[in-house]
Amino acid sequence: MFGEVANGEMALNPAGEIVKQELLRTPEIRREMSLDTWVIMPNHVHAIVVINGSGYVGAHGRAPLRDQCLYRKPKSLSSFMAGFKSSVTKRINEMCNTPGKPVWQRNYWEHVIRNGNSYETIRRYIMENPLHWAQDGENPERKSIK
Image (cartoon, rainbow, N blue to C red; front, side, top):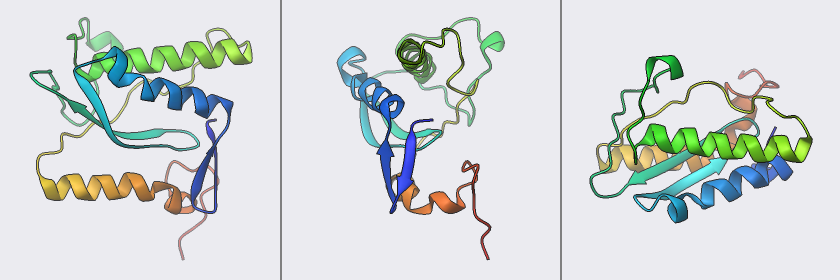
């Protein structure tokens, strides 16, 4: 959906470029957040999002489903994800003339990074993700590991 991995590097298509543009806008429109390491993959995104100051994270491993969450706290990770997904979806659907077509899965996975070792492991995983795309569980054309 967002491009393809070639020679261990992600090559974005026009939809992937929209994802990149919206991701890079994050610190402009959400001053309480900044981006660390990130990568856009053919059908998903990995990113370390830093919530500066007293932002509310509330992470527990998986985001609440929409109907379970009647209220999103401002300046929270869930508010960021909702806004990011919404703006990307709107722009991709305008470009493709596919109003209302879903772009994202309903939920997202989150993890609070609690120490330097965890940060380095996750950062490396994100940076190296395109290199391992052939074996990635999210790759619909995944090759068997022998």
